[in-house]
Image 1: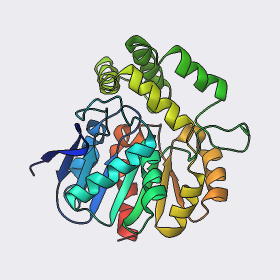
Image 2: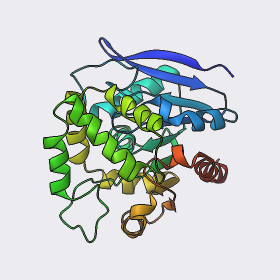
Image 3: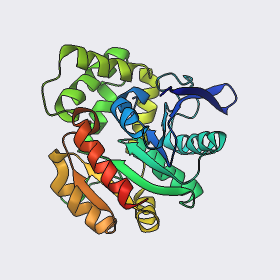
Length: 274
């Protein structure tokens, strides 16, 4: 099956790279912080056999335009709506990974859920920072995240070191081959460090708890969370989004490392909510 590729203008001079393959009910995959369409290769191959499968490089990611404007998740939510309009996509299942979940929630904030069929949210709390560490599911301690912003996202080598440490410590559960780690780092470095810093700050200071609750009450929603913080995430989501289904699998990049198991979870959810 041939992949259709397109560049869709979302602002004057700013184009987003989009892959569009297959027919049927649409699924839209949104990659996380500084990553690209390529991380979803196994999902595209699997789901394009039964669904219209769309994957987006957000602005300043991958093959999309690098721009100093709009590198925040408010703009990314608007960009998503413009892409869906251009492709004439309605009633899609959104699959957001990591900060890609923020794009999905921002879309909900701006445009509601009338044109969303369901949501699959991969390993991202709706509010990244909290001082209530014992109660809330968060990205990490404030001091650690501040140090990452201050010490790493200041030059290309810092970004390289940050992603390397995150990939080996959080993303996967096995030892990465050298070529795998190199590939992951190269994916991230397609977004320049000064834009990565903007995105990092925008993501960490976001608060989509209201939208997470609202969307989970309006459309079928599945959270898939990594094993390393599953107990905290499950407890937190039971309070914030009690109607949400929550599953646990692997590390932060579980859909890449455990693609067959992940695809089975998605298949079961999609079948139940057709």
